[in-house]
Structures are given as C-alpha cells and as structure tokens.
Amino acid sequence: MRILHTMIRVGDLDRSIAFYTEVLGMQLLRRQDYPDGRFTLAFVGYGPESEGAAIELTYNWGKAHYEHGTAFGHIALEVEDAKKTCAAIRAKGGKILYDAAPMTFDANIIIAFIEDPDGYAIELIQAAR
Image (tube, rainbow, N blue to C red):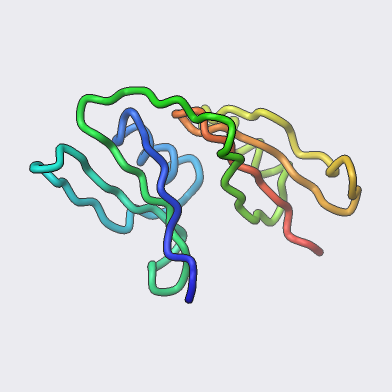
C-alpha cells in the first residue's frame, strides 16, 4: 500500500491551481471535468503520481466556500531552507501564518506555516542538515 493523494475542496479551482503551481512550484498532473456530477478534479504534485503522493483539488461547481471544521490540521511539505522559502512565497503574494523558526518543543526542527487561497494551512519543514 501507499498514499496516493489527499483531497481538499476549493472554491476557485483556477486560483488554487495557480497557487500550488506558481507559488509552491508543483505541477498540474491532471484535470478532469465531471459534468454529470457538476465537479472538476485537478491533481497537483512535485512529480508523477506513480512516484509520490499528490493533492487532489476538488471544485464542486457553484460552491465558493467551505467550512474546514476542527478536524483538519495541515498539509506538510519538506523544504531545503524554510526562511528562503517563506521569502519566495511572500514575494509571490502568498500568506505567511508563522515565519520560519525553531519548533517550540524541538529547536533542531525549523518550521513555518503558510495558508493557501482557501485557508488551508501548509506546514513547511526544513530538511535536516
């Protein structure tokens, strides 16, 4: 078994695809409309789905906003340098929730949190050196 993807619902698919591809550097792996179901699925990731997990962006036609509830935490991405990644995301108009800094309970781990256009939190974890 392996993890294939995580699905999140988005209110504006083009805006979300732009964020994940232009701000976070992912690739649009595939996109498919389902007219009978009135939804579109787009998969984004850092490489082929056969080699790694993806994020499924689900757009239900005509639905612009979702309540996240209290169960969802965040998506985590490994980055080479959290401080430089935050600066690059900020320069591209991304929202930084928590700038790169040592984790409260383990100073050896550098993390940051950003937010996607639909309010989903994304944790950036600096690769161990």
